[in-house]
Image 1 (tube, protein in one colour):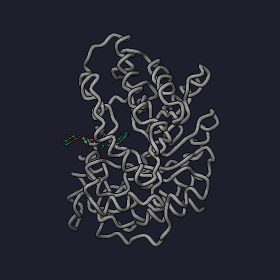
Image 2 (cartoon, helix red, strand yellow):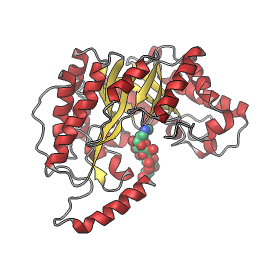
Image 3 (spheres, helix red, strand yellow):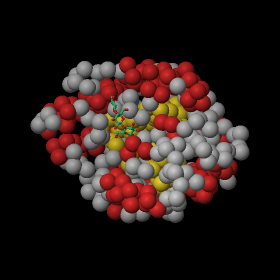
Length: 359
Ligand code: G3I
């Protein structure tokens, strides 16, 4: 619906432009570049963070220039598989686990000396239809869910790998924006107890990785973040294993919530760590110098918020380049959300991140 709305607004605006709009994904033409030569992960670790990282996806590995930047562990000390570890990729048929794509990401991380954030075990999207339309009983679905997560975690756990699986998004996006639980096969069959069940199974499968619930729109106070805080409190009081809350942080230029840092702190006060897990800051195209400058300030705000909160362990951008960003495919007329443009040239946003880590 949001996409439709944006499309309608864009259609309305096009006749008002007196110049040719650049291509929908292009941000290269007006990019004045970045000035800093710093390396983000080195900088992040120098201020006590565990990593600065990026999401990545297997089809991108054939792009040598992309891979060279991604593989520089001074720049990116952590990677998140954007798709390869999800349910549809790893267990497309019941009991048939396929780790080919997933192992490629793990091998890349291992070769580069990078950490991995596992993503994800249980989510209402990218589920094979055998799960989402299986009409399972509660007992059957509990077994299916715990088998899936246990198998994934045991496959990748630190005991059997040289690289370190620092964290894992066990439950992804359990809430609607109004603070109610997402209506999916897990909630509809098991109620909210599926969350505790799968977290408990995950801890048993891999006692060392940090178990996360990952969510968007927690970056500002509201009913959704209150619902998540209540969930954290109730899981903690029940003794359920939970280590962290992921703040996805898919944000909009000029609209970074002013209470972002307080939100991070409000969760660390509940006894969990936090991480910025999927940061990108999109703009309505075309790219302008003013938008790039605002985006620089916005990246700085987010990163400095994490820097200021000792329980914020790291920042992951949802791929580092506009070339492979999910934004143009999801939000018509928007893009240029990443710190590198689609020619793999650093944007002013890169300087914003550096300033955020230094300030
Ligand atoms: O795998 C098929 C492939 O077989 C087919 O040829 C191709 C044709 O378009 O589609 C491929 O599937 C795509 C998949 O990515 C793998 O590339 C889907 O269409 C596409 O919708 C899917 O998008 C992913 C999206 O999650 C799905 O919701 C994005 O790459 C991924 O970045 C995005 O990541 C999510 C996080 O997991 C959770 N938080 C939000 C974030 C952004 O949506």
